[in-house]
Image 1 (tube, rainbow over the protein chains, first blue to last red):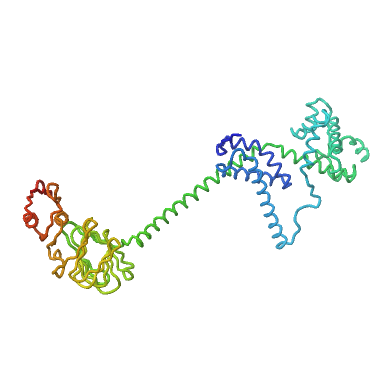
Image 2: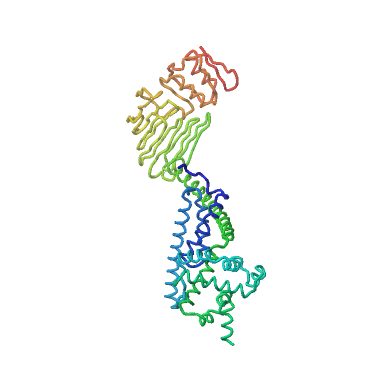
Length: 170
Length: 307
């Protein structure tokens, strides 16, 4: 296979790489950090670093490069958090703000959840996506679909019940 | 009433809850513990999913900002480092040359000029015309070394080894009077007092008083004796003994700042004699009349020789 000589230092190529991988990297980081804000922060650092090293990275290997950078940065973040926690323990003697009801969102759970949305019955899915993706209130949806608010709520309720069943006791 | 309310919401309470019209605790009353936990996780998963599928455009803008900020920062640092590097190299090069170049102090003479220089230890150097000596005064006490291009007469005070470095070789003494003439391929050392060691082409020659060492054109080193107490040029006269005429011509040129064209004569003719430093006409007469060479001054400072 001939080597791809596309230069990552070209801002168009760089942006294309970002658009291709940013969501996946953010997701990857979210599974690890369980914190969307942290995932965003690290995502930004990853691509700043890629830009700094754009001359050293082959276009062919950019995917594995950014994933390993993301992983390393996550591990550094964990190390840093441990130090912060230790510091807090020793100096403030306060319990950390991690709540006992903290819900872990595993990769498998989220993937299942998203695939379940796709398999919802048409009417439920329509309402569900309008509400979740388009951020429409039940009233607006009712107007748009020319049904009662109650009907919208019923479909939404049903969608959640189906998803609960599909995903099972997780 | 509450029951009725719950009943009326029987088929919609999850929708109400998701929209925030029903609190988590209220939801708990409607369903089992396991269901409650499952729905809490489901909601959290849905929120996360929304965020994960949201546009990454904002982040890209932030990345571009960070890159831009970093760029200027890096450039600043870089230029500072760069200038420090330049400054350091300049300082370093100065130090380097002042230590190794042995060129701390330089004395030179022009055409027809002689100069007497007293060195730090009281040694004297008399520099003949168109000559240069250079030495480093900072470590003069440790090593008495100087470099010479041209001709100079040394009266060296007793002390550590005194070395004169020339392109033709080096002359080392302990305390003595000697003359060194090193011009291009002509090298002549005369010892007037004490002992002199000449090192040329990695060969050592020891000169005793009145001895001389001469090397012409890289070869033939012969010893001859002189009856003089010091070189005659000190008194305003250059003396030569069996020297090819071309070196006498060079001496004349240095002395009077003239150009002598010797193309038409045999410049390897041996000359013995002397010429004065103050009068060019007499100098030319004494040198060239003896060899039956005619000379004329075509233009100022340019003399053409022929038979």
